[in-house]
Picture (tube, rainbow, N blue to C red):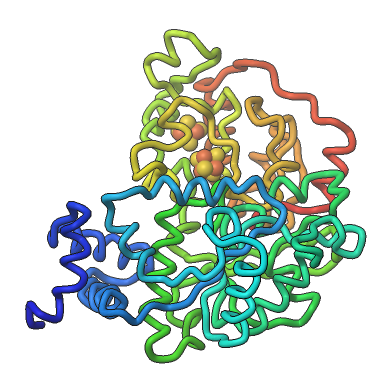
Length: 407
Ligand code: SF4
Ligand code: SF4
């Protein structure tokens, strides 16, 4: 391609101190995240370049019931950075938390975008359905109605962060505000716009950027192919608020392996080297955090690979056990976070069981293989007793059994 055609994007990158090499490397990284081969990198670069030549794609970023942590996570993609440049290729016409406009101007920007249609809708937070939606009012309108209206005319939706996925911590017992996930809510109002879910609390800005690139790739030709052209993996759960079974689409690359599979402390796990107390010599040595409640073995996300804060670090790397925020109904299933659970919620119809019986039950249940591995380690005497397990509250156990866990 002529240098002239590349001009806009490379000028934009150069201003931010990003080299052409870094840009192409990033495109290869995005290709991997989208489940494409490295050969797709030039196509990705071309899509980004098209954006840089002035064809901005409209987007709306709406907030439901949330702490705005995913917005904060996005803010860590600071300049100079390729991801920042990619995000600048979107015309984000409404982003309540950080937009300069307010009041009628902000509302008008959103209304005009919805009327024109053909945009990417990014939704952060739970959909608040309690008290017929009055648990979240924005400018006098119910949050759930704003979502429905925006979703109907969007080409595609990114549900960003655990709360948008299945309600997240808002969905935790007793959930008085009726917080649920985007897909679950759209099912109830029969809006069929494709939704891609990005897990974790907060989600990774890199995952958002990868999906935005995917959007830029398909939007040029046929936005309806957004789901078909993304390699997906699904999870199904029963929503305790609506009573419906909900099927969620995730990018396969993000949820294809467990934290434990990619954890740099895995060698210590295999060697039976564990932290049993914070502030101990074992902690200083970076031993495995399984006995401190790490949920890495049963959590399917690739946090150790992507990492946070411009890929600097992630939970286990900074010394904290994984609390499993990338799994479904993560608060009810995983709290108390820094203790080993006295019961484990397994998918595949196994249900809620005690650790002592897991080994026998999981024989052929692939999803629980790593848990079985951990318990095998215990049987072999390599784990030992460690700190005491938590005593699950009766209502928690009941709730876990009712809501079901990850697949
Ligand atoms: S249990 Fe946690 S800390 Fe230990 S290896 Fe697995 S993911 Fe890493
Ligand atoms: S490592 Fe665990 S707790 Fe940390 S973001 Fe990933 S899933 Fe959540």
